[in-house]
Structure formats: C-alpha cells, structure tokens
Length: 293
Image (cartoon, rainbow, N blue to C red; front, side, top):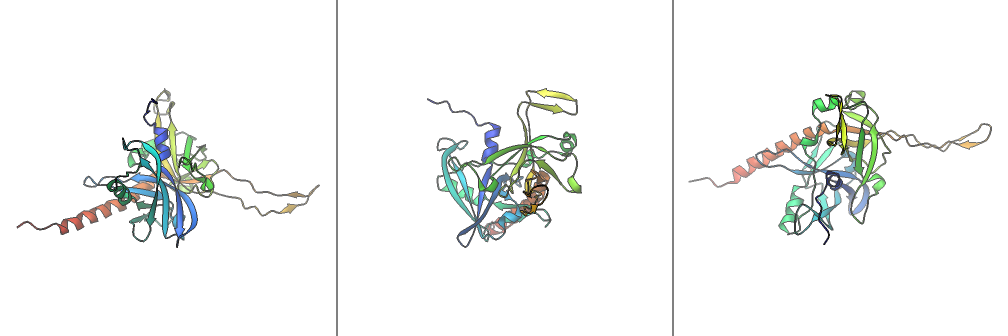
C-alpha cells in the first residue's frame, strides 16, 4: 500500500491558486489568475473569497474556475477530481478595493463552497489569510533583494491534467523595505505575462534564511510570507522597425522581465469591506428572528 503523505506547505501553496476564465454572454473573453482568501473572523464568521485584479473582470458577466474536489475519506486532501464552478457577477458579493487606483477585487466564494458540502461533494480549498502578511517590522527587516515565488497561469498556461498552476521563481527588483515610487508595491525580476494578473507572490525559505535582527543564518528554519499580488509589468512594444547600418537589421523588442506587485497589506482593506458585509448579514438575520413572547 502506498503511504499517504501529509501535504507540505509548498503543495498547499499550489492549491490556493486557480485559473480564472472570464465569460460574457456564454463566450470566453479572457483569462487570469486568482487565489483563495479567508477573511478575518467577525463573530465567528468569515468569508472565503476568490481574489484577482479588477481588470481581469473587465468585459465579463461571469467567471468559471476549476476547483479540486476533496477526497471522500478526508477533507484535507484533493481527490484528483475537479468541479467547474461558475460565478455570476450580477448576483455574487463583489468587494472591489475602495481606492479606484488599486487593481484588486474579491468575490464571495463561500456559497459555492457551502453548496458543494450540502451536495456531498466538498471542495478542496486552500486559502491564504492575514496571518501570512508581513508585519511592519517584517517589511523593514527584509534584505535589499530576496528570492520570491509567483504562482499563476501565464498566458493561460497551467497543468490541465492535474489542474495545477505554474510556479515561477525570481527575486525582488526593488527593496521590500521601500515603497516603490512611494506606492504600496514593489517590483519583481521575473517574466510576467498576461494571464499572470492576480498571481500571489510569496517568500518561501524552506531550509534557512538570514535573520537581520541577529545577523545570523537560521539553518534549517523556514520562513513564509504572502508578499503581494501581481497586477502589471512594464513592456517594450515591438514595432518591427528595420534599422539600416552596415547591414540591414530588424529591431525586436525584448521582455523586460519585470512585474509590478502590490503589497499584500492591501488585503486588509478588502477584509474591512467583508467585515461590514458580515455585520450587515448578522443584523439582517437578527431582525428576521421571531420575537420572544
């Protein structure tokens, strides 16, 4: 019998990310990346959100994501089977970041999860939560450059057979301790293509890291943070110009291999919106309760 191994943190990082297919009037219009987020609890209630960039939703009236179903014997393992989940944007709670300049939005996924449980086909959902966001002290102690991972679906590419996203490794291109151009964001040095929008960016040091507080290398000690969400990247347009010199040549634009990432702290603003909605739901339920006589 094959031994059933516990899922590692790295494996769980894979399962928190999904490809988003956008649909308008029944036809596919685009794709992007999203990740699952569990909001902070309010009176023992929280929401599971599907988070992505606002621009991923442009021109769509619904979304389709393919989610792993849970193993029948334990809800803590994927079964190898998948479920198509459709989100109608006109009926679901949508939580766009209150700042129009912040390209971030969360969609309430809780009802879909609950419906699957009620039907006896629970989903295997791995989510990120606020505990993984660096504190202000953490941000200040990060080194001038750090290794990072981005998990997503560049150009819509993912492992269809196993329904898993693509992992890309790179480094920060601007210091995490600084706010790039005065904004709550930073740059990463890795190839970032359309379709990667909405990809979560992590710091994952499994075997050790330098503790800047003590200036010592923490051998064998892991470090994990949810750093941010990719939303854009600078590009050089390819105009296909022929440049005459000693010999004719064609100028071909090159990828800059840079991505713009908003800090994960932006998720606290989404959580504030969810908290207000949960309070509204609780108040509505309280008024519907029969009065005691």
